[in-house]
Length: 577
Image (cartoon, rainbow, N blue to C red; front, side, top):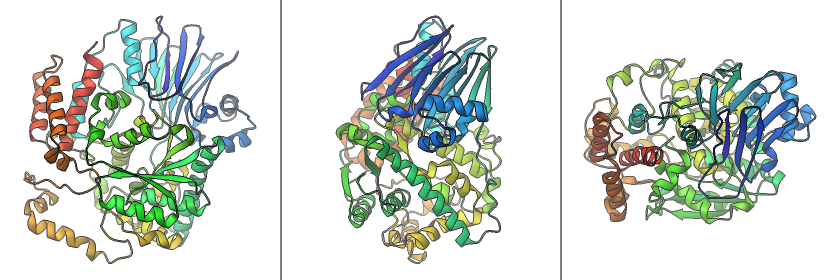
């Protein structure tokens, strides 16, 4: 993945990445500091590595509101913009940026570094420091290479391995290296006089707007206004560079509304892409929506499960931040099309829980036990009793862990080819939605009201999640569940909180892992061989080896993928150490 590295060690690191696209490599030096970047040659004027007599400015990613900020701060390029904003609003100037970005700002006069990730952390920053020595960068392997280059030992964090076997991603600042941490979303590093300080500039809040007494129509109007502004920023960014639009489309509401509103606003030259098992509901609905909107659609079948075969290649793209298996289809597509003519990868990322919520009833807000995991087989009592204490409520905990740290880690893969955007990640829209009273967001109530009020034709298509249109009576959505409960009573007990082992696998949907496992001999053999070749790594303690073996032998195909991800990540960092 493209990125940067900043360090004040003597030995310079050679930045290396998978040869997947066109990169620009350059560097600057000042005193003991070396600043390097290896950036993707797309949206290039949104990025910079700049040095003058007073400052060093580094920006990576994409600034969706760059042109608006140019006008506001009377700037003509991003380096002068950052300097102007630093003078006018201070060290947290990047709080006004919108998009997937990261970067650094150094004041030579103050001898002070500000190194930041964006509000959601999907443009990651990792860091190592010891006394007055620092290695900080956007890739975990950059830090590891810096440590090795300077003969500094790093060790396996078995807690991170265990976390992959439960959460399926890293929900906090841990990495597979004990000595290296990830910078939290909405945070920045301040280095002054040889000291490193972690500072916060953005946090999840449900009280940015006072909407308690607003009418439903007023709330919907405010939501729609901010959603359209988020769409404008995304799609105008493509046009700024002369790129064609490129967007995901499924049978869900989120990607649908991204495209529907974009089309309504006049953005029409869009190539949609949908992927999944042939003839699944997502594919059928996506093709119907594309036909209605008059858009081209690329359908990518996953029947062969080939997108799961390149284990090491995909792990090299995200360094174990989340299980590798969730993004392979999109990578296959991006490697096939001519990405040079397309702009942002537009999606509906986390819209389901932004306008909706993770919470099914208001009483859940006080529940601060572990949640958002992909597997419960290895969860310990300590994890259940001691999770999420630093969050005000359950929604904030799940939004931060499952959404920011988990779902958005898929952007690490995509950014090897292009930049990413989702209107639901627009900070102004996000804070507005979080301020909508919870009871209006539960069960997607205000989400559906918004669609029916502003874009009623978008409701003419089935919502894949419930298997019916949002205009149909709710009782219809329960019928399949009733039939399923009659056939599989243990499932009912699981839903009621009883821990019983299910003896069946659900195989329908976009990504039917268990179906592939059952029918695809090559897939099974690949996993079995990979496991057998990796499980005896001497770096594993007996305890973590036992956990890996247990989940692989007893888990579903997706849980096996969590094991494979953990093994592959350990191989990546330790097999050639």
